Image (cartoon, rainbow, N blue to C red; front, side):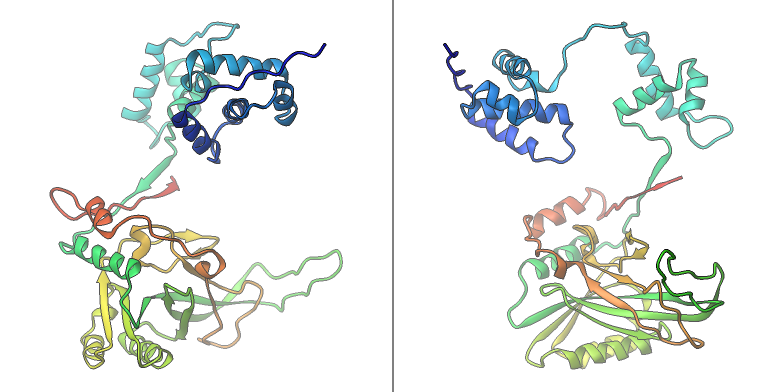
Length: 372
């Protein structure tokens, strides 16, 4: 006679919501994820053998975690009980000493501790130091950089820019404008050998320089389209020519809102005069706060640095040589926004400005991890 199916596991609404949220995270350990799926499946009334077959585990494992949740709740799913085996040789006090030495001291002949130098200093094995560092999330080989904004009007500018993005004016277009200067035009010293069956495309290791160029780009934040142009130099004269192209490319019935950084070219008297002569064009400047790097290309600086990843980047064609001295070669400016779904803003401009404002000064800290 078959055994009766297991009764449905009683799961509160708050526990169910928390388990569903955690199970969707990508960095959850596999063992913890299995426990959460067992509890959620048991709460839906699935039989133990069905759960075991669906999750590729055993029936005793399903029964064990059902009982653990019934006796200890959610806390029992995330903490392992002490297991049999060799007892720990490193006491809690010794472990705390290693952590404190990692944080507060440096070796004599180096800038930071390594696993082996710390193990030799503390008279323990390298594996022990590695386990302790992993447990406490210590990474002495990494360093983060930050930058302070000394602009006293930084918070109002952020509020103004975020307001433009979240609630753009009627019959207006918002363009985020920036430039990438000193782009090198490089050519190989010998012709590139073409691709053949069994052989990749081949090129010489050395190259010749053919000068530099500057890419000016304006991103339409709403549509993800880009107006771009290459110039030989990076002065206010070239920037004015690019502004003229923007003015000619946009319908005359629309207002133009330009978001720029505080580079000297953007604040030149001739540029200010150009803006004053065109009532439909207005400019919002923000303090330069840094850049990101991605896939060998550098993202052009944008005011959304203060909110999230940058939506467009500049890519250079890798397999095309550049001919002629100081020739303005072709570049491809493509939009990540156009390849993805547009992101919806979930924070109000006032909340973002509050997060950026310190009690003493308006400060924005932006960090970028890099190896020493």
